[in-house]
Length: 151
Image 1 (spheres, rainbow, N blue to C red):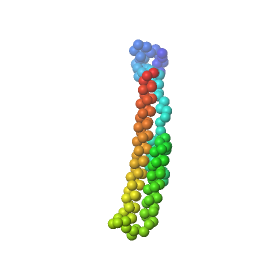
Image 2 (cartoon, one colour):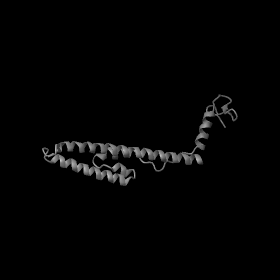
Image 3 (tube, helix red, strand yellow):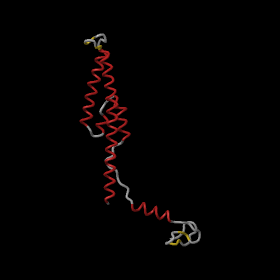
Image 4 (cartoon, rainbow, N blue to C red):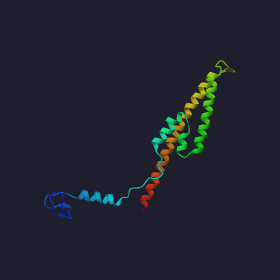
């Protein structure tokens, strides 16, 4: 092996140039490290960024879309149906005469209760879709790590 700096002989045992003293220990270690450690392929990961966009931003219009993206179709459809029921109740209570009393309970109060329920459902469904993706990605990474260690 020849030195890159002075083109003279490099001692194989010392891993340094005899003339200029350039060390090749780090270069040799890097080459061995890159050659022996295979990079694991992380297949099956779900994008966290897309889940955040679908769960929170687009979730305002179509709740449950983040769950459908994370392959939880039944849960996504249940959230969507629940949100449509809540949206309907909110619209009906808002458009109805606010002076109608059910006992001593005003329909305006019912409107605010369902709006709060709708907001809680929105926040929960976005967070649940996000946390599900994070858990699934960790499981895929652990499985891939165990497979690469077994080789």
